[in-house]
Length: 608
Image 1 (tube, rainbow, N blue to C red):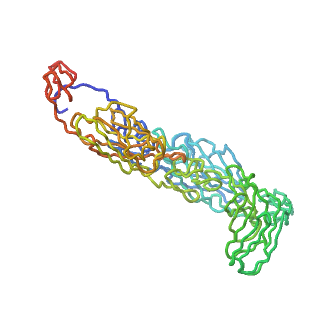
Image 2: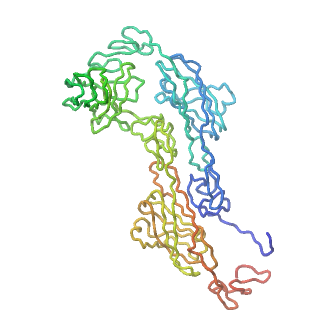
Image 3: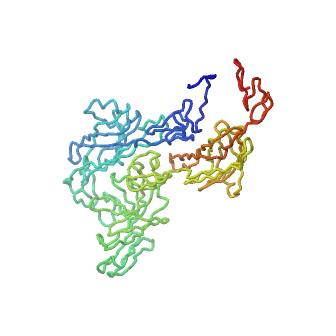
């Protein structure tokens, strides 16, 4: 201290959300929301943030990410066991229990397993990972679990079976779920890293099989004609082994002159629309529709045929510009969570390849540049594989919320935009109050004062959200949950509940949104002006539960702080009797009255 007087120790009760850092608070940013740097109870500065000032201003100090990923393979021999060695570097600790996902090792012969052994040449790494990982063949993803907190890097190996066919460089995504220490309620996610690696890149030499055997290891029986490692079917037979015979449902043949637009269709609706510049010479266009729903090989287990096979001829015809095919399918055969796409059979690989298409009821229209066999397939989406398909709006290669793409890939989260595959998501807007204006009707001390408020915001505030106006301190208005709101603009009244909640100690009024408000709100409420000199109020405008979170967004509404003179009054001491004191001379002094105060004799205390 710099002077002598009376001193005593007081207990100060911290109030989170009042913009004052006191008590055991580490921060106080004027609201009670998580994810903005200061936790909802003001007890923690959240991970990867730094906060300063009062109200606290919090900024993200680091973007948690994998800074590097390196992969090495021991062999490029097709079909052989290959030890894959991995080294990962990251810029924040990964906590125990976190799951690291390495996705994109597709084309291998390794079956699904929850017990893939991990190998450690550097034995100092073994304590940090559980000894076995989980492998999913369809997405080519290995998930390993952190056993003890890892600070900066990890290195390990695991075995995969090399592909049996030509295979280019793998595009591997490295992501992490539950890896960040969230004890401070941080909603920051680990950024996904995508790298190209040749660890599964092999050259394929077709095996020499018997006349009826085909496949990478000559283990499958062909009911058609074996050509190399593939089974080619006779007309009317389908499936990768030619085991399904189709019944001819209809056919059509029409000669189409060069440079003439023409449509060829069946009575069942299947057909092709050929633009004028697609054919260079006169061509007999044919369509044959077979009642067959071909099965796929194990390499395409996510596909299920839901329509009849349409064979367009002459087979192999190439068009100078795309033609529009129309195919039919049975809507009731489309499984929940799947989408319908048009596929063509690549005779060179034996695989069905998508041309997408636009669905309308039980038909699909797709643009193609050649003729072959076509069928409609149901595609089952796999969230986390980095491919946007089925009913997915996005797929960023992981199953985390809060990074722009929801955990089930079904939604692009609020205030983000995502593009590409794997999806790259960027925040497009920072939800905030863009302006707040306050007006008071009187500056007379101790008088009732009508406070008028106008708020502007850049995102809709949803019904049920609570707007907090904090910092109106020094007033004589007691606590109340029924402060009437006044609307001079009657168009505003449907958007707010008619009464607010007032807390005198923090000078905070909380009002509740009744109907979604799109851009602005205006209303009034009454406070009692202070009875003492009072400077400009530093009012914080914040919102809890105001953002529409149906898309799992973890973004918070940014707090606005403004200075307003609505409670600024000048004080003139009243003239009281010798024993009366206080702003309105209503209190009795047992000491000596000096101005509006009661001064005590030595050994006497309290304000009176």
